[in-house]
Length: 294
Length: 260
Image 1 (cartoon, each protein chain N blue to C red):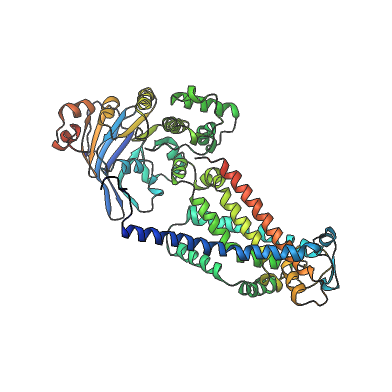
Image 2 (cartoon, chains in turn orange, red):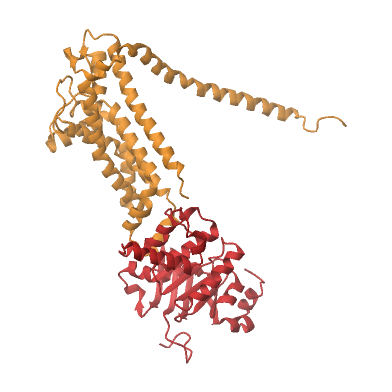
């Protein structure tokens, strides 16, 4: 046997090496298939929508139910809806996450809350919309308004805010908490001085998730505060408003004589808003992670 | 008081423990422990793993509050107060400093690590904080190494430095008692010796309960030593008496390295 390769594969090893190669290639192909819709969407939107992406498109108010003019009121309306949803969802979500992570003991109440959060995340958005109509528009008498729509969006996004924040709070080592408690700190002092400052990235993730969904969702806002067509900018949270997502639905299916590029341009704007928010979040997170503290 | 050791000429104890038992759910960690710690002594506790040493320290600082399962029975009297009757646990914990086996540099600057406890107490004046920080770091033998970089993160110091930072943090609140739990596990021998020198100095000012897995460390530092085994206090005596003539065979076996 001298001179023979001592590592030459046996028949069995040869078969497993071959199947290993097939498996790797197969999974790679399937993963690459994912790129098709992603590239397809962006490609079609760019090709079809680019002619419409002019400065006046963003700055002009829509005319003729959206068949002419720009998208200024829809764009501004989406910003309003998103900002108010953030103002409502973030404090509530972070507070709930702090309670669940730092104070709650493992008892039936905590378990019930956790089940409720999971279920809330699974409720379809159209059901949230109906809840919003009942709770905010009628019961709390916000009327059909930005406030009602944003509250509906906030309720819908609360689960992700809570989960993202709770995870990041729990990523702060328990030893830090014990060390601080042993200096005579209360739980709140510990949270304020040690835990919260070190869980910024999780809270940021929650924030971005709220923004992306608030920008994109249509169903929760169409009954609660977003309108088909309106040429006035909102003056406050009790005004109705247009929104990009609903506007896209309308110019695509409801309005006649819309120039061909308009729906694509609206969709492209929508995607650009979401993508730029994501990019901002990734940049922030990388900065936070860059100064790793332990 | 009839139970427990009560030598004739001993000063009144700072810490009195009577019939202390600790359970975690069904599991018994410590049972029927009686002992006294006198002011300005280093009291050593030795014993193998699972002897109940750490649980003992946890009970002294009322850390049972953080561990839902932990159940403490018996009487612990510190500075004349029964700990079960202490409502203001924050004040209690600021009178007792704790150092854990693994150093914990909080993710704050070195300065802020040491200034944390005074700040929690409401000290705001920069000059006062500066004084406390320098004094605490000096007492922990860390000042010379970090005085030029107090703004650096405490959690990025080396293990031995972090452990001294932890001690400095514990000292920053001017505690009456310092609890040390196997402080040398994550520390190199040279640093261990430096910290031991620090502890000898500190004995002038405060009382130390030293839990250690190093038998010789107890011998070097402690005036009196207790041997814990399997959740019981087997024996306690002045350290030299324990090393030269322990009464219980299990103590002799442990001290001679036959187990543990």
